[in-house]
Image 1 (cartoon, rainbow, N blue to C red):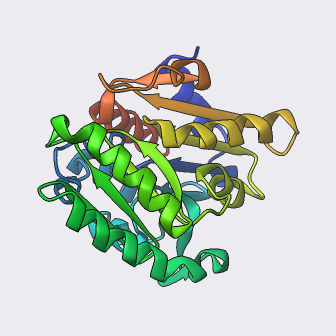
Image 2 (cartoon, rainbow, N blue to C red):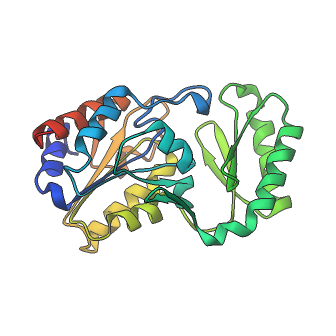
Length: 260
């Protein structure tokens, strides 16, 4: 396991050949009760701004829609992959994976019915591509949410993705954060990803696979500690930082080392 200093050393060794990617919720932004209230730490935004143009690529790979990410992280030259890689923001243009387009109507019907069947539970519509049902603020409704989500997925031909205190109904297309990371690290020698949740595990796996196959010289898999961290995360990473504050501090030090 690498300490923070060793991870920083790896990220500053060959900056023009390095790509650094991040999850949003729980990594750049602290976990909050309502998803719309999640705001990236000012220190993280500052560090990203200082790093932009100092390394080969910086990007966010998140379960959030890219339009949300662009608004919340207004840093020039960032690349955004949203909805676990089902959409990307490239040169200011939102691009949706073509395979998911056919499921827009099914997602909309599932979202409508989730609101009807689960009054008082937060239903988050994600750019017409997927819908997430949250029970963080209504923990006593967890079993009901999961039962309704399973039924709606079956009725509308959608897939279920369990996340922290939530379940997402999404097109049954084999796309996850690992696919997005594979795309964004292409052509670079060193790549890093920071994440904290179950949905980030495929991104860590993608980095390890790219390193083992010789497509990367160095992979730095950064786990962001929290009380809600999944059991499998520590064994999937190369090093750990102490929550979003620890990640922001680490990024700030990388920027300082690169003269930003």
